[in-house]
Image 1 (spheres, rainbow, N blue to C red):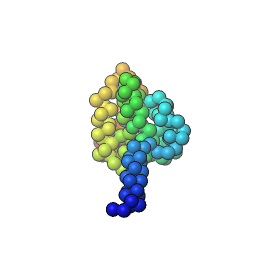
Image 2 (cartoon, helix red, strand yellow; image 1 turned 135 degrees about the horizontal axis):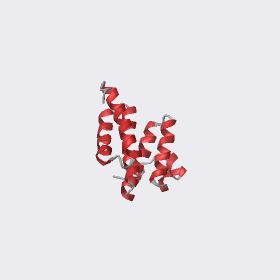
Image 3 (cartoon, one colour; image 1 turned 180 degrees about the horizontal axis):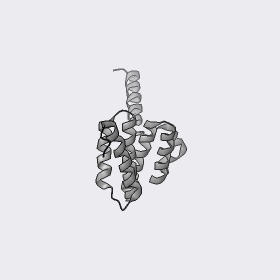
Image 4 (cartoon, helix red, strand yellow; image 1 turned 90 degrees about the horizontal axis):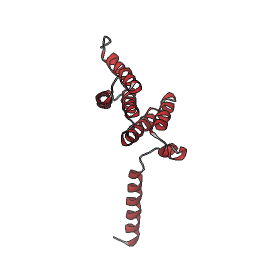
Length: 135
């Protein structure tokens, strides 16, 4: 392999690995959301969801869930997990959403009304789509 080909290959591999390590959409890095607390990420996700940016919102909720879990904020963790489930549902991936919703439901308790009510709301969305309107 010539020196030029090696250089091109090395540059391609380096750029590919750099791309893999940056999993957050560019607008978020620019807006400073990465440094924000879980509640701010939850709010950003809600804002994006209201603008019909479902995939970006889902990523915000995933980050909020991860950050809330790490910081021990159980209420935000549960709410974020349920909202990730909702985003998967809205994107047409109900099976994936079901997994996230089950995680949220395992952690939710009536003692934390925001997360608990969000789980119930998203569960209703899933049940209605299945025709189980009596649950």
